[in-house]
Length: 126
Image (tube, rainbow, N blue to C red; front, side):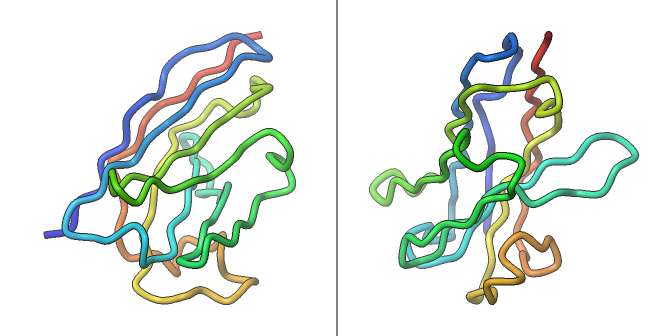
């Protein structure tokens, strides 16, 4: 049974950094397209960053230059390094795994991902 388990969320001040992790089981991170999404209560889930099986990356405009998505193949883990955090980055963050290669236009679309973690909360205070 595929499991994605996020960790590493927490509270930071504006301008701070956090790295969140997503440990996968029964799912090879190295061979799959994966992504990070975020969602606040009452809002739609927003795609933040995607990484393909070839290592190619895609970022939402709101996080370009501040967030970096990466995989550790040996640890079978997905990461999101978040720098220069802003209060508007406050959300529940979810990792997601696909079973195919989303087209460029669909890399940050939640419907293209089958597997989801339970989420980790990131709170940025001003």
